[in-house]
Image (tube, rainbow, N blue to C red):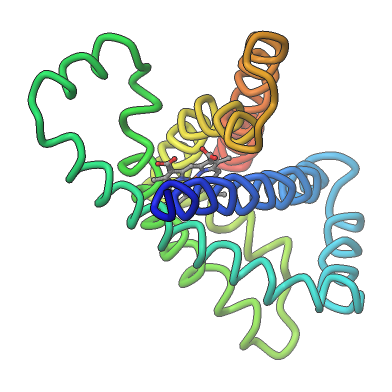
Length: 210
Ligand code: HEM
């Protein structure tokens, strides 16, 4: 019983951290969209706001902790599930009834983590260390590199796949009634996943060609 309680608590914590990252993604997408429209001035103003607003300053370490928690817990839950799935027929049954996205959360997540490391190295470090960085030039310049742009697109398509399962799964973990909400949440999750994958990728493609 205690084990059941802790694993439910872990699932809920995973869901909260995942949905927290979903909010961050929405904000990030809105800021990135401003690279194209309205353009440079608005993007620079958003960056300035993110760098100086006290609320954002408080949220930044919380976001970093949310990421670390989600990744560590994701790896732990996968490791735990693999142990339980060692009986072969259970694995086969899962393969029939579950989606590719749900069975590969760890792999889509790990690729996103790899991309995150590349992103931090290429963008966040110069951003924080240069005296007067030209944020717009820094971001758009990265998209002139075909390898970076391809990696970027693959990462966001995989993140979309992660979210196509993760979004509805998080609400399920939080206890939304399956009969009433499942179809609606699956639909919202798919729309959100599509917006994230296409939205971020389209910005990269736009600056690669322009
Ligand atoms: C912005 C990035 C990310 C977002 C928005 C996100 C979002 C989510 C959401 C909403 C869930 C569903 C939680 C639930 O079922 O209750 C989830 C599950 C999961 N995430 Fe992520 N995630 C992100 C990055 C990552 C990364 C980098 C990893 C690396 C390991 C990862 C690994 C996992 C795993 C393994 C699960 C399934 C856990 C389980 O229920 O067994 N995620 N994610």
